Length: 234
Ligand code: ATP
Image (cartoon, rainbow, N blue to C red; front, top):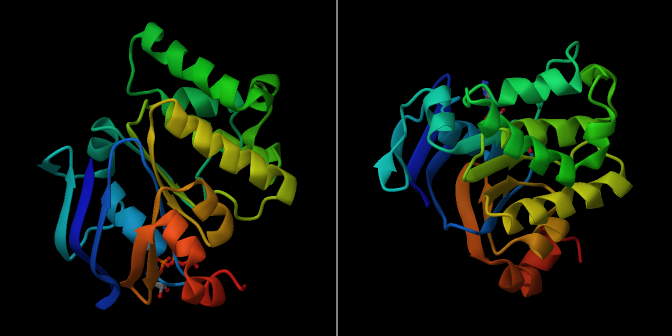
C-alpha cells in the first residue's frame, strides 16, 4: 500500500532522515520507534506532504505522491495526526469533526464516518458542544484521531498518540488503534512507548539519528535480547 524508498529530508541543510525505506501493507499496524530526535516525526511529515523530501520516493497504491501538497495527499486516502494535534481550541468538538469532513460534500458521506467516530470514542458524542481547548489531553487526542477519520482514510498515520496522556487513557487510545485497524484502516504509528506499541503492531522499524537501525515482525523484536535491553529497558 505504502512504499517509502530511500527518503532523505533536511532542515537548513542538516539531514533529519537519511535514506529511509519502509513498507506498509494493507491491513497492517506498523510502528516506527526511536529515541527523541531520531527523525520519526520528520518521516511522517515527509510522507504527509508537510515537509518536502530532498531525495527518495513515496509511493501510495502504485503512484508517486512525494512532492504533492498535503491536501492532495489527504485526498488520496492518507490521514495524518501530528504530534501537536492542531485542533481548533475555540471551536466545538462538533465543528472540529465537521472540518475533518470537508472533503465529502454530500451529507450522506459525512454521516457514516461520524458514526464510526462515535462508536470508537463515545465520550466525544457526549461532548459535542464543548470547546476543543477545554477537553482533557486524552480527549483531545481522541478528537484529533476522530477528525482524521472523517476523511475516510485508507492509511492513518499517528504521531505519538499516547504522549502527555494519563495511563488509563493510554490503554484506551491503543485499543482504539486496534479497533480502527479491525474496521479496515491501515495504521502507521510513531511511538516512543515501544513495549505497548509492539503488542498491537504487526511489524516495526527502529530509527536512530535519522537512519533505519532495525526492522522486523513485532513479535521477533519483542523477544530480541538487544531490543529488550536497549529499547524496552528489560
Ligand atoms: P521526538 O520523539 O522528540 O518527537 P523525532 O524522532 O520525531 O523526535 P524529529 O522531530 O523528526 O524527531 O526530528 C529529527 C531531527 O530534525 C532533530 O534533530 C530535530 O531537531 C530536527 N528538526 C525537526 N524539525 C525541525 C525544523 N522544523 N527545523 C529544524 N530542525 C528540525
